[in-house]
Length: 107
Image (cartoon, rainbow, N blue to C red; front, side, top):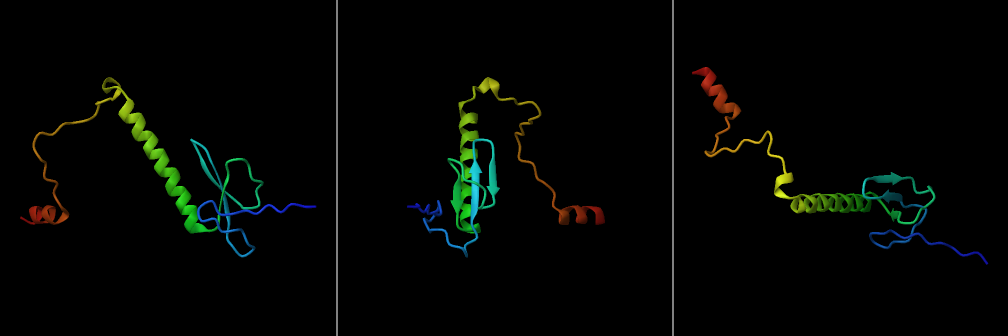
């Protein structure tokens, strides 16, 4: 007796049908790969039922990466943070706009 493996969207739970535009995503700490749906699934792969849910996985991956980077930054000792090339400005600096530059050039 053959068993049927039902693929479901990892975002919404919709079962795969022939007319859906599915993607398979393979990610780890350093990469995020979008694969064709017919690529053999490995443990940890994500299946999504369309571009909107693919974007959801991209957003989640980027958020995880940003949170990890922020955590690493806040855990770093102050001595480890380089200030080379950073200028501290005591007074606010007014940045000229194109209109102000044009008026100055015309005067």
